[in-house]
Length: 292
Image (cartoon, rainbow, N blue to C red; front, side, top):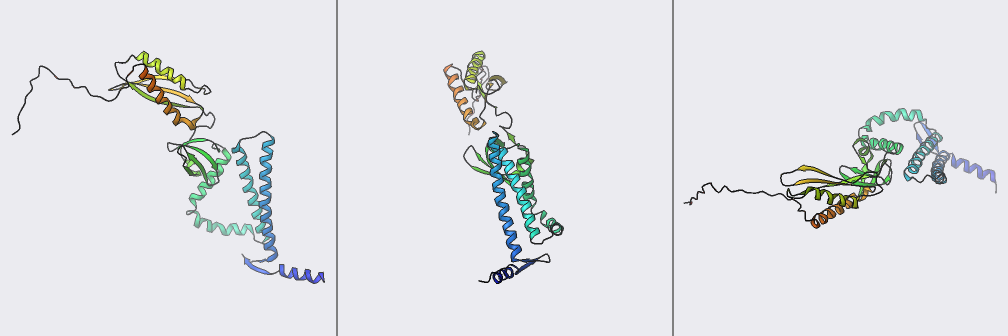
């Protein structure tokens, strides 16, 4: 076998012109080289991301949010560099490409405005770490738990088990309550009204006992009972307790309602309800007229 002729044939095949990009001829050799660079880039990114997770684990960092932020940002940086090298290998002038792409970018900028906002917002969220996987948020009055954070959207689950995809721009531009940002303790309260004939001191004592029973001892706050309002048909009290588990706020509030009901019923205190008293004047003349 003549190896020189084989190598010559291989060189001839690799020198085959495939197409042109921006006036630059792309051969089979440059195309294969660029493809190899892209595959190598993906491999390097995967290895680096594993290395980041291992390094954080060795240092005792177990926060999934921190690991995810560093891992994803590193992934995008490696992809950007690898893609640029692959284009340079094809002989494409990146400066000229960016200059030509600027005009095109202006044209599609309005159409891609929402996507760009979500992308930038995703980078901000990953960098600031004001929201991380596992956090409990209140978004538009709804309690959700963050499951996964992406560069475009954030996946969350509601108390009813519904999966939500929240655009990152919504989390950045709108008011969002992070119930587990620094201190996971939150207050749960309810309003209960009793009749005006009730012993208010007794009601206060009963409700305080219930509040202490339902209060989370790990929470920094203290349970409290307040007389808040002399209403038209009731005297209103607010019962407030604290919990370190925002995700079970709804369940805790239900338990608090049941406990208040049972305690007041046992103490003989009547929970008020809207009513109207009608008083008749005995001295007034009552006129009865028969309709024709």
